[in-house]
Amino acid sequence: MPTDERTGLDTEELLLVWAARRTGVLDALLTTAGTPAEVAAATDVAEPLARRLVEALAELGFFEAVDDEYEPTNRALGMLAKRDVRSIGSVPHDLDVLDELVGLPETLETGVPPERRSDWEANALGAHYATDPAVVRACVTAAVRANPDADSVVDLCGGSGVYAREFAARGVDATLVESPSAVDLLGRVHGDRVSLHAGIPATLDRSFDLAFLGDGLSGMDPGEIVPTLSVAVDLLDGDGALVATDVLDDDSGDAVAVEARALAAGHGGAYAPETVRDWFSEAGLADVRVEPIPGIGRHAAVGVVDG
Image (cartoon, rainbow, N blue to C red; front, side, top):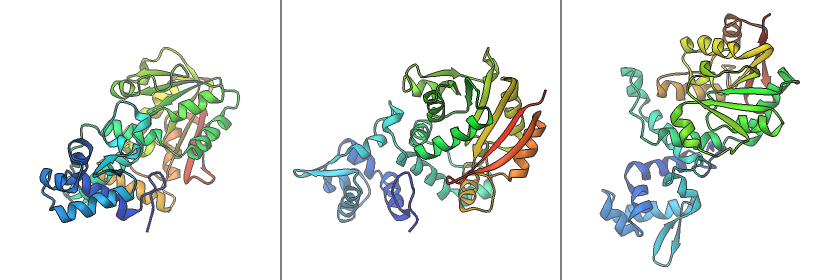
């Protein structure tokens, strides 16, 4: 069966963990319950089924038997503690996305996606922080090639900052732009290596050699993209470049997955390379090109300041 490359869970395993969360079994095990009998008492799940479910969760590495009780392992801590995005991992966010995918039929009929959990943003940042390092390196390499002499970069809608951190590791002065709530959740994760800017990028009081959007386009509706790109252009020096890396609609399975998640979320999508090229031109960029990034299922859209 298909396996999520980040979690190592195949479809059935992820659904099992999701069912444990939906029925309250996970919450019980993470807080007050240590045995299947206690799980059954705290939920509407019968004890024989609770026992099988708890044993399966233990086999997946989320819990371990200690004497006569089950205790959470490090793998389960991301479902309990949200203070440090580095320890959350990708599983909680994958469960959040599964909530939306299960609600897709109703969302398609009503146009209204399910209400998100209060810890959605923390989980999303945790999953973003767990992005495959090979993907991060390949995307940053594509961006650096667009302006090899760049000394500074602004990472717009930069999530957990893993891309900004990679730029900084290569000696590029990196500024991460995110919402105030995201910046608050990140705290000092990156120390002094990355500058954090909470709020809209237009309030930045400096210019940059590079502007970067990693997986940002697929999270936006079409009407949001050109204005966002235009703001990025305004932040660039006279010879600066804008680079967006993302999954585009190239008839691949990755594009279908992005489209499914976007439909379930009620916004975003996988856009055609030629459409992205037109958006870059409309934002005032020149020498626009859209090229695949080998080995990671993403494209890099590149444009330079026209002038």
